[in-house]
Image (cartoon, rainbow, N blue to C red; front, side, top):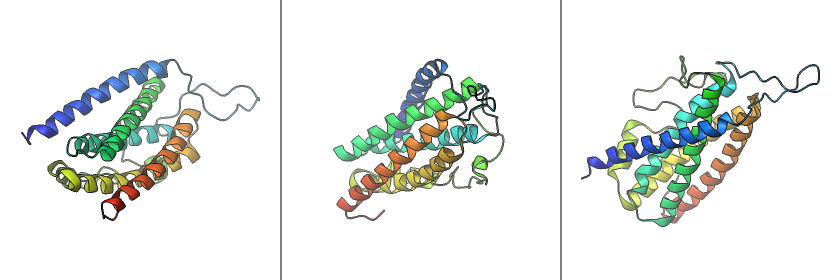
Length: 218
C-alpha cells in the first residue's frame, strides 16, 4: 500500500500539470505579451518576444521547475496528514503554483522558446547553479533524501518536515522572483514575479506560525 502512494501522487501531479498547461496555453494565446519599455519614437512597445537567453525566458523555465517540486511536496503531505490547516495550505500551493507554472510554460510556447535550457539553471540571475548529486536542482529545492523522508512520514512528523522544506523552498523562490521583478522586460513576467514575492513572503510567515504551534523551529 505504501509503495503505491508515491506513484499515485506522481500520476496526479502529471495529470494536473497537463490540464493546467492546456488551459494556460489557451489563455496565453489570447494575450499580447509586450515588452515594458516604450519604443524610441514614443509609440507602442515592440511586439517581439524576449530572447532565449533573456531574464524573462530564464525565469520562466527555472521557476516552472521550482514550482513543480512545490506542487509535488504539497500532494505528498496532503495525503499524509488529517490536519485541516496543513491540508488547506497544501491545496493553496497546488492550485497557485500549478496555475503559475502553466502560465510560464504557456508564455514560452507563445514566444516560440524552448521550455528547457541548454545550460545550467540561474544563469539569467548573473550566476549559475550546478545541480547537486543529491537531487537538488536549484537553491531551496529539496533533495531526493528529503523527499523520501517526507513520503515516509505521517501525521505531525510529516507536517513539520513539509513546513520546514517548504519554508526553505519559498525563501529561494522569493529571491528568484525578486530578481525577475527587477530585471524582466515583459510586463507579464515582472507582474507575475512581484505577485510571487508577496504571496511567498506571506506563506513563509504563516508556516513559521504553524511550526511554532507544533513546538518546532523553522
